[in-house]
Length: 133
Image 1 (cartoon, rainbow, N blue to C red):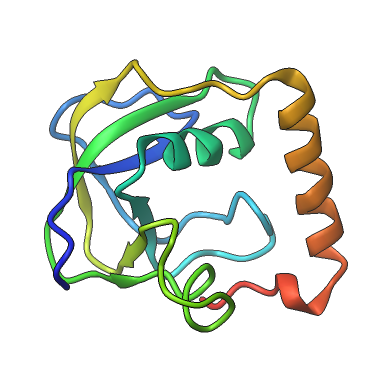
Image 2 (cartoon, rainbow, N blue to C red; image 1 turned 90 degrees about the vertical axis):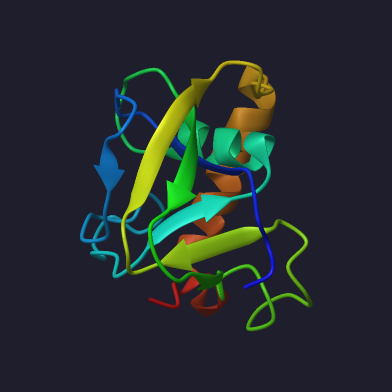
């Protein structure tokens, strides 16, 4: 992989510097699926979107992270479904380490967040919304 970062992960979890994030948790997009990978992006606002859409009522957070092993383009948003990797999204079966919390990412407006939640609900009912796990 040629991408060098920095990388970001969006969540509603309260994490600390040095924490390791690992696969094996339920998807925020299809909670019935346990994910085989941990996901991250080189776009802080993209991680912010993931944080806003994450399950739970806690505040969305974005963390700068570093992969501890090999990673690949996320096939859910790249060539398997869309050309290239415009979102600079990646996944790994190896943990990613929290470097710091990021505070200067752009929050969605309530209207935009509702639109994204609606899109997610529509995708859940469409076979094109299946997660490549």
